[in-house]
Length: 288
Length: 222
Image (cartoon, rainbow over all chains, first blue to last red; front, side, top):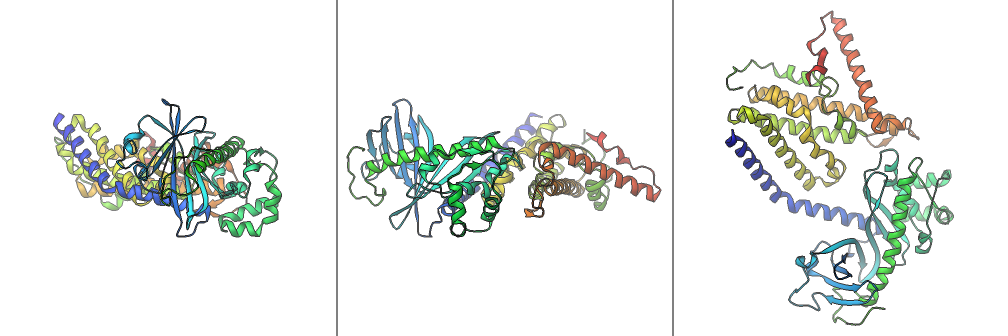
């Protein structure tokens, strides 16, 4: 009796272990591919674009904020790491160009750090092409995970809900291209005071947004420029019967854009504007 | 227990498959695994994907149990069946995540739940542990197919009425009856379809002048 149960467990465990080892790298590659595709689509990037990933951590023990930057799809041990105090002073800078032996950089240095979010910075031929920030907000039922794409001038290039558990037919409508499309082309200043309304959506705007499922964003923007300009001055129209989900996403997008702008200023000042790989000599200048 | 019992004669494959689809349809007849049948079936696609996953798990688990039942001590058979199902479900889960990430993103949450589906373990206990490999495979295939078809039919009804579309193709400009896309609508859909199946069966039985079939009391199975 014990033997057959033990044997069943052992066999099952061995089999699952084997499958895990065999499929793990495919799974990682697949999720990286999906993410890269979403970023490329949102920013309408060309094929040769490079994407840098900046992870943000809070070191609660030392009251510091850590930015770990590395090329897309690589571990954070291979990149640069900037540490700021909470009032925005650069405390430490580590990375391949600065710190040879690895030292505190690497997986081991992640211990005790609370992840705060992630930002992807896209460059085409060394020039900034845009940012994509990933974050979560509290929806009606569970967290809504979303991406916000910004142009270098911090105008919203697109919003995409990546993961959610809202009700189909109600809250789930915020994850449609038509709802996400309402955010497109809003400037950072406009986004900072972005609100949600329960007024009915004008029919012409609804018809225009419905076309987003089949039209590429840049064509869509060109075709509906005057409508977008008119609606850009108005709040986001909530999904009927799902004001909470609509407000959740709008609030999330607003905070993400605001926070990202402040963080980017800090980072830019500290890094001198050049990407990690392109900078030959590290400068130890303070921020601001 | 099963080692002592003489193995009964298995019905022919055709009857086993039809049994799973009609006479003992897991959802409409046995009323097993209704929770996932309500949760996933907001669209045809979701129903289809989960149905295929259940079909695979059912066939693989039935085959395993049918082959290995002599080695399983009768007193621990239920935990062992659970382990067998869990292994196959986890294996399929990992393979889906690795090779069809787009699909997995949609149904990943539900695939893991297949471990707890009553229909699978009930077929292992009722059928696979008592019959040889080949009939067990047919039975598992029939049951899995019955579940798949049920999910697709429920999904079609809910997607059509609740969302005005079918397989993602928009057919109606507005949502005709949003209610059907919500969880409560799922129960109503199942009830309506179950009633419809009963009606069809009674008509068929009446037409042939046959006595009510054994499975007419299908719900009693669980």
